[in-house]
Image (cartoon, rainbow, N blue to C red):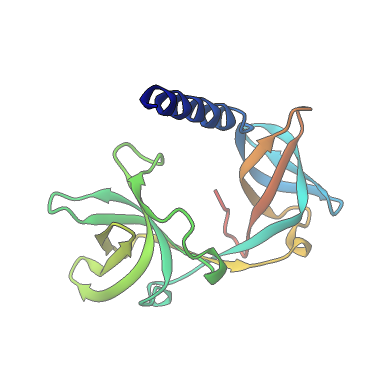
Length: 201
């Protein structure tokens, strides 16, 4: 019986590993819109040249705008790219206020690839207080919390639900996870578009 259970567990692990391995690789594409026909988004990327991405019928579009420290209110779900400080707190480099429909996205605390040793914390603002170093907030997520210091030079952005009409030639866009399909084409179900002079990354 024990052998059967061990065999079943091993088979399940192999199956799960196989399913994971079959997930199509993804590509990050950012640049300016060259054209959009309602389905295919052509992007001129400084790194990749012209890239065409097929948007799914239900693809979400999020507008990215500049925001201010006053827009970070208790209860807001945010993402904070930061550098650890000696006292255990995190000094924010960039704060993104998510749209309500994005609540829970990427929740947790983990390494960030923007700078060596940087971190990313996604969670809900529990409380804020002013300090000589900037706004200090406690950000809570499942399993923990982080003390975040937001200095005056931190970049603050906000997401808002947008629509495909914003994907006009010249607009700055970023597709965070374009999936490479078996036939070599790229497909995505989300696009970030900059509003004003914001360039989404």
